[in-house]
Image 1: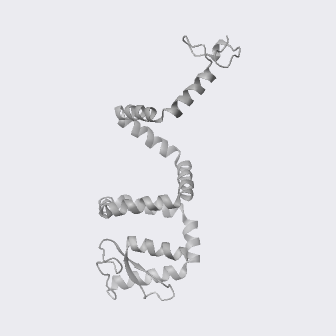
Image 2: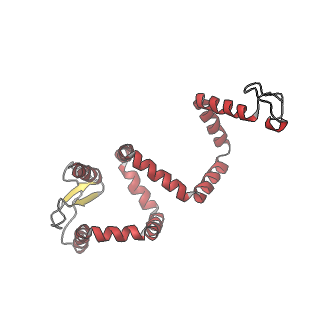
Image 3: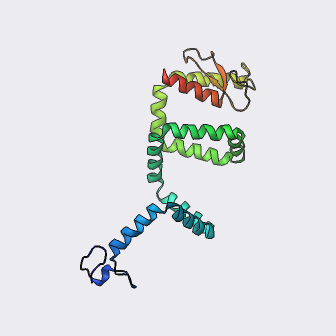
Length: 200
């Protein structure tokens, strides 16, 4: 049987059932090309199909993520590495849009957060050990501030010293050699400060 597209003589098994005189390989190439040129139609059709069977699709996605966790994590790491600026910008935009969302979500999902934290620590013991060995001054300074806050020796203000914003206020150490020399900043200003320090 001769394919009308590539002109090759092929066995009947190389053709789909029906009237088409194009072989499977040529039909697939045509289909791939059409999908590339009609991205919006393909996406709309996929969305429609997904919405029809939403529960089934969610279960399938969850199963896939569970089976391919390692591969997906590697892909995500690679993407974040190659798109660092974009990822940081998106995170900041989400936070600026509604900073209370993260706080509320953590409050509602305390157990989930604790479990994730525990599992992350178990998976990354070597990374944690390496960090502790190479950042002893940082750890000492942070522990000192935490202990002093707990004992009431220092009091955390309710606003950022830079933008006067409220929300999550964090202690910033300009120099870890002086653990009690701190500046109280909101999460956004703290992030900006460290970004500026990295540039220097």
